[in-house]
Image (cartoon, rainbow, N blue to C red; front, side, top):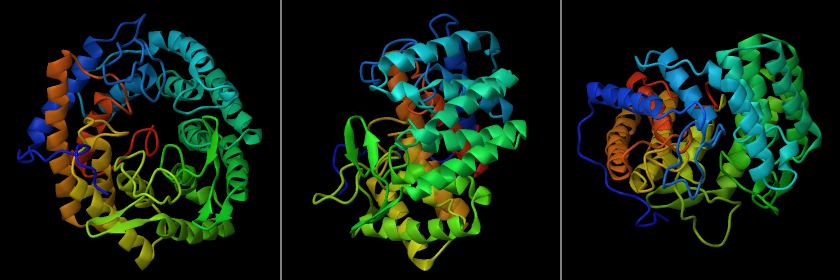
Length: 397
């Protein structure tokens, strides 16, 4: 189940906090140096044909601006830039890009990672206004009557947005919105042969996805993040179905446990990355405020699989790169307090730095994206220093 060619060996560089701090500073300085107030950032050759100036939170300007502000805010970097003058243009272009480039009817959704809900959240962080808060609320509220889909495009993302907005504004309306959407989300859970699952209406297909961006794990993320907003029966329901579904869809082998992109199929899964496979499932469910011997054994075995697979050849990023896989080890370190997981996270960090610098040498500049580029890696590197995993967009905004 570990596919040759998708993974690479670890580098043998010893952990060096000074070297990691230097890489974080280098990534931030490079991103600021290449920012253009009219065109934002250039696309990268690895962006699958993406165009310059992508404004989205997932792989464009909104995510990069947020990451640079966050890195400076937490003391990870000295370099800083005032991006507030760019916010009106960013919001305008995000709306146009979302309407033009999203699948049919997706423009009706409040999308955390691709639409202006995410961009408005960024603006609320940098230059908050009541009108921006109202925009986020309208976009999130619209998802109540639309297909649930998943974290990137639909209701689970708006529930995450409600949690972040409550933290930023202290307004009670966000909890009310979350509670309505949590009830809808749990009501749409289906009993299947592979345990309780949601059917995603995604890109013209109806299927049962599993991962933290497009599937089951992504739908559970806001339920875990908003745990104290759930009723006791809802908490009991989540604590019961999560281990059941994970066990029913697990692929077990001598090197550990993983999961496919979709509900269990006849052929073993090929991907082992944050968005599909063991690392993202560990990163999601190691934060569960409940435990059982079976659940903890599954998570540890999935961490073992992620370690056996090794760093990803696709790059150093979060969504499908070495940094994203490393978050599984940081989360296990926090859950278990076993230092072996922090050591493994840091070994992945040193390898990711080599990957980032190798790509920069080839292209001549960085890759400017939160989920698929260098600033996401910088946040992972910082978390390897502190030992406190805060996955961007999900755990922290």
